[in-house]
Structures are given as C-alpha cells and as structure tokens.
Length: 167
Length: 140
Picture: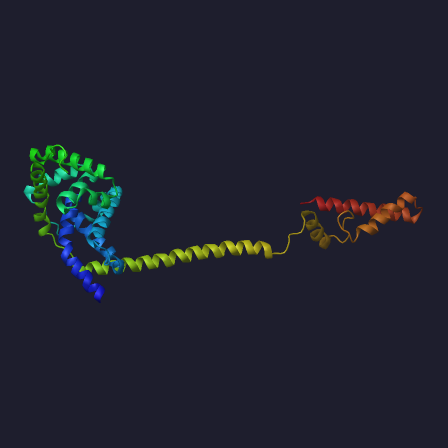
C-alpha cells in the first residue's frame, strides 16, 4: 500500500512534465502519451528499487526514450498497426503555433533532438546529458550546436542559432 | 549574456509545446499500475511456458537417447535371414547356422574320404538339399 501511494505521488508529480518532454523528443502526441504510460508501467514493476533512486524521473524518461527508439526501429510494424486500427482516439491536434516547431523537430536527427530537449527543456547540464544519453560530453556539445543550427534554419529564427561556444 | 538569451529562446520555444500536452488526457497512476501488473503476469506466464517447452524438449531428447541404449542389440544382418528362413525351411544352410553346420560339414568332409555305396547317395542328396536351401536364401 505504501508503495502504491508513493508511486501515485510520483506519477502525479511527474507525468505531465515527462509527457511534455517526450512530446518534444518524439514530436508525436499520441506516441509520447503511450510511451510515458508504458514507462510508468515498467517503473511500477520494479518500483521497490526505483523508488530508492536519486532521480526516478530520469529512469522513466530514459525508459520512455528507449521504447521510442525501439518503436522507430519497428516503424514498419507501427504502419501496419495504424492501417489496422486507425489513429489513436482522443488525441488533440497540435496547436497551430506549434505545428512548425513540431515539424522542425521531426526533421532533425533523434540524437540532436534528445540532447536539445534534455539540455534546454529538462535543464540538465552537458555532463548530465552525457550521463543520461551515454555519449561523451564533446559529442553532446556537438549535437546541441548542430541541433540548434538546424532548428534555427528550419524555423527561420536566427536567435536559436548558436553563437560560438555557448553551451 | 547572448548565450543565456539563446538558451532561453530555445527553452521558450520548447516550452510552448506544453500547451499541446495540457489538453491531452492521461490515464491515471492506477492504470499504469494495472498495466505494470499485467506485464508482470505476462512475463511470468511466458517464463513458465518457455521453461515447459525447454523441459519437454530435454525430456524428448533424453528419452530418445535412453531408448537407443536400453533397446536390445540388433543382431547382425547375416543372422536375420537364418532365423526367418529356418522356420520355413527345416534344413538350415550349413555355412550360416552353427547348430546344423557341424553335421553338414561332417557329411561334406566324408566324401573326401571317398565313401562308397549308399553313403555316396546320401551325400549327393545332402548336396542337393543344400543347393536348394541356398537358392531359397537368395530370394529376397
């Protein structure tokens, strides 16, 4: 019972934030919704140990990202499932203001998108991003720089472009 | 200073996505717990099924191996016709039946001693029977 209560509290405190982060990473509302829910389900399976982690939210976010990456690899299956079942119901369309941003995010490589979200939206430092993604810090810096440049170009917003080394 | 501004701009741009997720319905924590419990059950059932399949395979292989070791040794091919033909034809071939062979070889050796009279006729008859038996043995 205590486990369930602590899990419920954790869920209530983090689910919207994680959904937002996964939406920024995947650029797909319904997909991020399902990924987050699946990651929480897996967290509940081993909640007794995960609850003792310093940052259980990072664990759920990493699992959700890995699930997303796994699904992208099985994109063919997803297309088949979509053709079979149709789109997920009750999924609101992105707001008009965000359509361009979501479209731009979809066009940059996954690794750059993940680094940008973790650094700029989640607020992790470069070293923390490196630890969560398992990439060297130099690689993270390069991904951030290239990702911002690509985003700025796609959004025709020069203010997003990196100016020298600003990471 | 420009670095900070740049960081804020990216942050603000990404934060704007929050508006899309605010209206998104999310299943509650109870649904996540239910889904997790379901996953645990499925994994347990899958594990049991996998273990059963492995066990059944191991038992099958073991029984096959055990069956070959426990079964009676197969007699040499040359002896099989002897037993089957022996039931149909009373006089067995001298070369392949140890029980009858000594008597027949003795009768075969006697002509070397040049027997006379009736013994020679018996020997010829034994030779005929022997040829007939061998002819029968060649029939598949």
